[in-house]
Length: 274
Length: 156
Picture 1 (cartoon, one colour):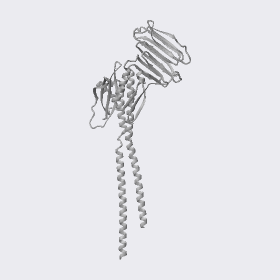
Picture 2: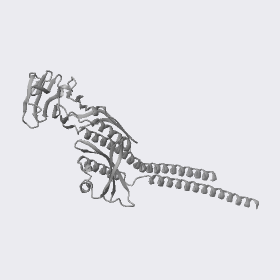
Picture 3: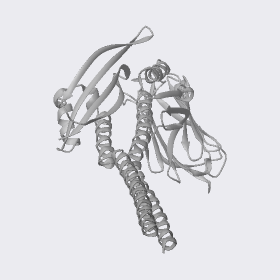
Picture 4: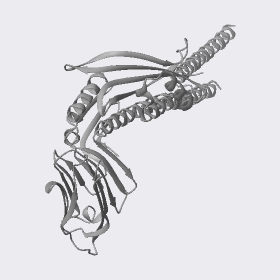
C-alpha cells in the first residue's frame, strides 16, 4: 500500500511538472509574438526612413538638373526642355548639395554625381545616352533592337535668340525605309522673324540626314541624324531646345550615378530623374 | 505494548513523509507559477499598443512634406500657405508643427540664416512622432538656399 502510494505520488508530481513546463512554453511563445510586433514596427520605420531619404535626395538632384535640363516621361515618350549650354555653376550646385546632405543628414549619405555634373543621362531600358557639351546636344542609342530599334520618333524644337538664325536648309536627307523614324524639326528665332518647320517626315534610322542652320550665310548650328537612330544638335550660341523621343516601350530616365543611404537599413541605387 | 507504540510511531513517520512530499510539490508549483507570470508580464510589456498606427502617422507626415515640397509650398516660406497646406494634407485628427531651418552657402561652409516655425504648438505630455525633408530653394534658375523641414505630429 505504501509502495503504491509512493508510486502514485511520484507519478502525480512528474505529471504536474510536465504540465507546468508545457504551459510555461506556451505562455512564453504567446508573449514573444506580442513583443515582436514592436520590433517589426521599428524595422518598418527604419526601412521607410531610408527609402524616404533616398527619394528626397533623388528629387532634389532632379530639381538642380532642371535649372538647365528639364526631363519628363509619359509612358514611352521622353520630353526634354533645355536651355543650352547648361548653366555654368550647375556642377558646383551638385557638389554643394552633396556636401550639405553629408554634413546635416541624420543618416549617412554619399553620392557620386559625375554624370549629372556633365549633363549625361540614360534612357532605360536600352541605354540610350543623352549627352551635353558646351556646343552639342547628343542622343546616342546603342546599335541593338532594344535601343536603336526602339526609337520611333524625334520631335525637335530649337529657339535661337532674336536675329540668331535666318535660314535652315537640308544638306542631305535619307530616304524612307521600313526601319524608319518619324522626324519633325522646327527652328525659330525668339522674335519669330524666322520660322522653319519640316513637317513630319520619315527617315531611315540607319541613314544620315543633316539640316544646316545659318545666320547671314554663316553656320550657327545644325541638326544631324546618323546611324543608328542618333541625333546631334550643334549650336554656336545660346538656344532653347525642346525635344521629345518616342520609343516603342515604356521608359524611364536615370543618370549613371549612385546615391547610398546608410542607417539600420541601407539603400544604394542610381539617380532616377524621371 | 511495545508493538503498539512502534506501530504508532511508524504511522506518524509516514504521515510526516507524506506531508514533506506535498510541501515540496506545492513549493515547486508555486515556483513555476511565479516564473510563468513573470515571463508573460515582462514580454507583454515590450509589446506596442498599436504599431501600425505609429507607422501610419509618420507616413502621413512624410507624405505631407513631400506634397508641400513638390508644390513649392515649403520653399515659399509663407505662413498662411503652409498652414493651409497642413490643414488640407493631414487628417483633422492629426496635429502638426513644422520647423524649417535654412542655410546659405558661403566661403566653403553652410551658415544658418533662419529658423521658422509653422502650424500648431506641440502639446505637453503627448506622444509625438517626427518626419524630415531636405529641400533647396531656387531663384532665377540659381540655387540660393538649403533647408531642412522637420515636422512633429501627434494624434489629437
